[in-house]
Length: 335
Image (tube, rainbow, N blue to C red; front, side, top):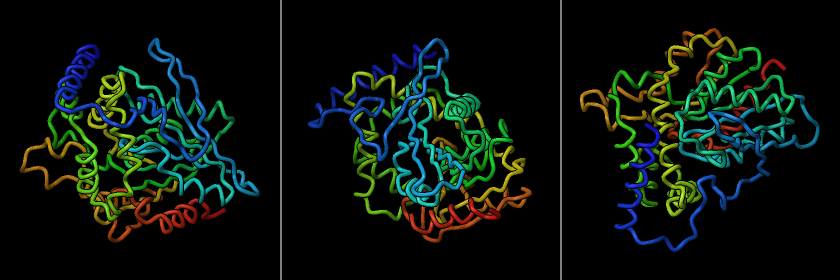
């Protein structure tokens, strides 16, 4: 199956290259070689499936006196972990050590051809923390990172103290609305993405209040890899991340979390992966994320919701000062 997907990716890329002249800019590598992160990037080696996989991460020391705690920041599907820069700075200023990984399959980490699984990503994250001598963490997770954070908390409950779920996806089971879609179809679709089409998609699908030019680094990270010789491999990994989200729901697990959990939700955030592939009659029922967060929090022993009026899916970039103040205040409650 993976060989078939890679062949499909190669063919889609070849067809796309015939219709699109070579880019003037030098391409990025599929490990985002050539794309700057705000802090030094380290590599943690994970042997998995016969491959040597490198898990990239930033490990930022507290500014001034340490408060003795570590914040673990988990990224979403469509962004490198560099987009946490302002939150890293705010947490480090409050005395936190801040660990910010790129999960396997994302950002500067390795892009395996094998399927991705939240259980494996959680296990990798725990192994990374072990290598750094970190026993317990507070988690701040965005979008797909919220699904991983939920699985991490369920798998390693003793390692989590408090958790912020920032505009998380996975608040519903997308399989109830979206039929299975082949990886080959998704690869063909993703191979056609251009800088302009990606920027328009982000602004529309995420209902962003940001000026379009604020997305320049993330558009670059997504589209300048098209010229890489390994772009077909990146396409397989990227499509596998969609299949993981669709295949491995966590909505039923969220009410089982016993730690304090704060949902930070954008009022305009209606992101629902796969909506455009769902039957027309079902699409309007998907992505009611504020309502879903409130319903789930009401079932949790320590769940609360804060809604950011007028913001979309990237609340930590759209309202950074309020976001960081809310995160720091919540993490410091009772301490």
